[in-house]
Image (cartoon, rainbow, N blue to C red; front, side):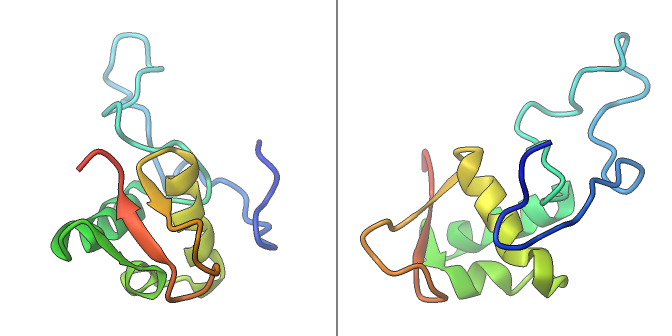
Length: 107
């Protein structure tokens, strides 16, 4: 398991985030190849965060991306997991704070 980021010490709860389809023949295939398999972000959170820059023309502030997430301790970690997965990216020229721009990759 990856080291926690930004002080998060959560443990994956696979019963809460079922990423594999039990009905698939090998039981090891993801339900969808775009689902990020990371304990820091659930599929629900992934969809919610990814919708924010989409709804705002392709980019949004980090604060806006955190708004749909309810667990404040893990919300930045969820966004970081999506960055690490290559789905969104931070504006690396700006300070890492709530005003940092988050851009959807490939849109």
